[in-house]
Image 1 (cartoon, rainbow, N blue to C red):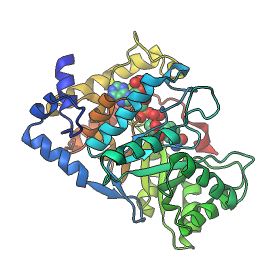
Image 2 (spheres, helix red, strand yellow):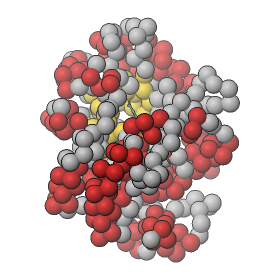
Image 3 (spheres, rainbow, N blue to C red):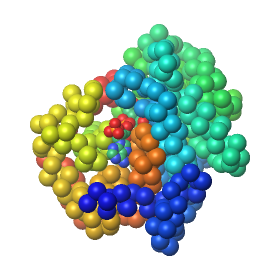
Image 4 (cartoon, helix red, strand yellow):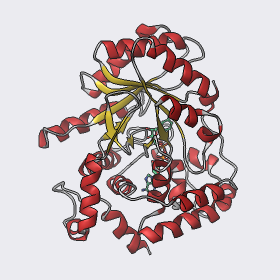
Length: 372
Ligand SMILES: NC(=O)c1ccc[n+]([C@@H]2O[C@H](COP(=O)([O-])OP(=O)(O)OC[C@H]3O[C@@H](n4cnc5c(N)ncnc54)[C@H](OP(=O)(O)O)[C@@H]3O)[C@@H](O)[C@H]2O)c1
């Protein structure tokens, strides 16, 4: 079984990087080559903006992080694994990366900020592959002492410095502020007008905040491209609180974060083997016990397509339309598996069956900023 899964994963993309195992080339049959090359072309427009990104992006929160991920430690091995995750994603045609100024540890000794790492990975890649095009999304932290439109531009310029770039493709407000929100939206508009970003978005915005941000930018002729929210098969709040419907109505792309429920929907964590660290507080053995019937169905459905549970749950999100999932990859294997979530489609019956099984599970508590 483990061997079968490894084969599915390794054949998910036709890797071209010189350091990939050559056996991957043998395993990549013609139809998979086609699927992989299609991924490269299969981009979606982000909301009403001119920006096109791959149907699935990669989250870079764990890169350099010592506060939530990586068992509170960052070392050279983890950095090499993160770099391999980046390179493998690009090899597989996934070129949209999501980071934030608050990801990774700028202040702890020996650790490094996620933006800095992403910038280095891009720079190194460009040496080997000057034509490579990567779309970078980063975020502004709406901290209570940050006020006014200028604070957005100041933070953005600091992010660009860390990234080593003169502009980014997408700049997002990471969460709504307790106050100062009007100024933040003005700051996003200024960033577009100054050519520092191609598109702008928000994150953790409720339906009413989303509509207000959309209208305010529209007055300046700037489309709100995206709202990045927690969305997965077992966290369907955006379907219930009006956010998904409002995104669809306004033509704003929903970027789905924690799309594999922080690893729990991959099936690798069980009541006997729960995740360690802060995730263990959320995904307890009791929760994981209740999850098993859903995980069994996900696995069974995946077997019909020779797909892993991870690929099934990501495909389920893509099938909701107007959704771009951004799973976090810590290493090459995880990134490679994500690529296999694209290029095929669950049937509507399977999509509905999974939703109705998921309805049996009480959702975990989300990020409280969603309710600000
Ligand atoms: N806007 C916001 O407020 C916000 C909040 C959260 C996240 N985000 C963004 O969304 C991205 C993704 O969310 P997330 O990192 O919270 O959760 P996620 O994507 O649901 O889960 C990522 C974790 O799952 C595990 N994993 C990944 N691929 C796997 C595979 N193929 N097989 C088994 N396990 C696998 C890894 O951890 P282990 O290997 O340790 O299990 C990985 O760190 C973040 O990186 C960030 O860019 C944004």
